[in-house]
Figure 1 (spheres, rainbow, N blue to C red):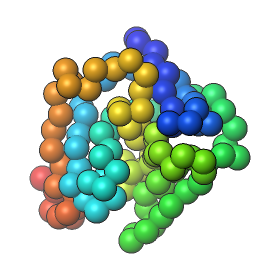
Figure 2: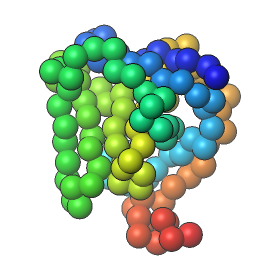
Figure 3: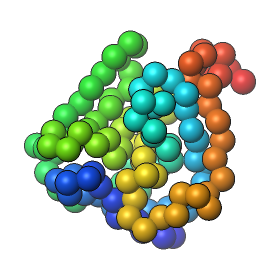
Length: 120
């Protein structure tokens, strides 16, 4: 399995993630569309935070299910726990080092109509 490193813009948040990049989604909900999040959900054991949690802040809204982590310095959200798969770590592919996101197939998720989208 491949190991990727990634992080925020200023470098205060750094992590490693192991796995094959697959099942990548783009969501059109209010927060994902504004942050241009490109979702790759992985199991928690595939993720390793390399820096201290002290520089990470959490923003929650709506159902308070998702945990939207961001760097306190630069504001970038490199990973989170999404509402649709809160038990997994949701990696923002745009924050991985050296990954050509233009070559990765993506699926669309209709987060604006979340309840209907998760059913089917």
